[in-house]
Length: 112
Length: 111
Image (tube, rainbow over all chains, first blue to last red; front, side, top):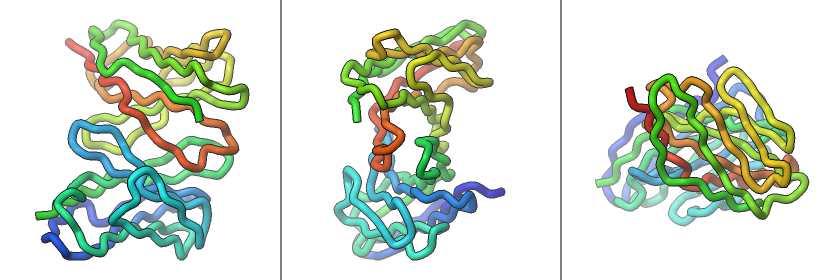
């Protein structure tokens, strides 16, 4: 039982490049989340999803897009990366009936 | 969801109890108190949650005041591995889809 798996773990991009972060969970969780964490700061919610085919904006959604085509996967896309998007990205999931989040190990993104 | 207030940092001696406070004076009747922690560079980890009764599990104890306006997370015998940022979150079970974290408390356990 892998839990929440994020790929890639590390990535370096140039300004203007695009990329997609993949989050996969094998716990049949309904809700999935993407957070970013900048050095010395707390987690900030980017986007979240309450079920397959649905997404919603969080606290800092600008510059990101998401998709939840399959229940087990939640994709975070950067269409045109900017240095301000250099951060560690965490994915999390939970069931609809409990606020107990399971987090992935994080994806460290650097935009030059 | 109710707002929470936590001290930015605390220190604790190894082997002693660590008591982490959280104020949530605007908590409503159907909102639970959740605690998570984040060890450096790792994803946050769920610790414990409660509604109004005190709760205990293998990791920690949660003490909620009778008026539910504040709570304390207790690590009974802190170890160096408990050094982490601890987050207190207040949520209802039915409206917690948008789950946000505050700044938390940086707990440093000293040898």
